[in-house]
Image (cartoon, rainbow, N blue to C red; front, side, top):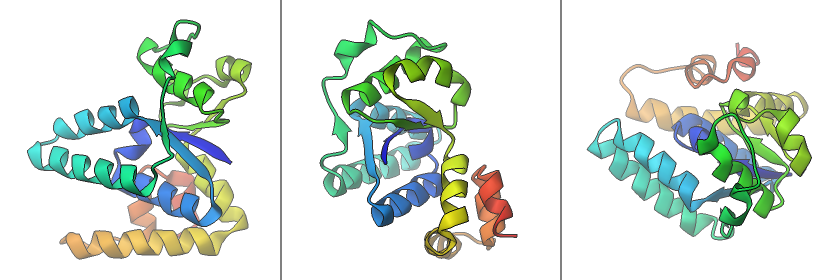
Length: 179
């Protein structure tokens, strides 16, 4: 499976780490562009300087760990595309350039499948993607969630369980499997 990760699924730590862990285990081909990574950095900067610095460090680590994930030369497609939000055209263009068949995004209304189908692409919410994977491979998802949860609880005063962590990350269907 070939996935293009939108900035909105890279910015939240839990969703990003879960997608990356599962992608590593299942050998999903993941992609993004420098512009998508920059959107993540800018979103973090709105929180505070520490969040921006952390995002920059994480982006650097992703570039090292996934050197083939960055999509280039996608701009040439932009002028031929339509989406409800013109600011998202670069995401679809990167998907087309990388021959990606799935855009993973929290903003499904900005990526209507009726438009994406013209390019052999569809949009999927990370909750749907991970929930469907958990139905057939619960141990893999559970192990990834446990790893993230352990890391999260080491750094937080109030411990969460798997259900609450996933619910907080807006992975509602997946969270119900952990009740």
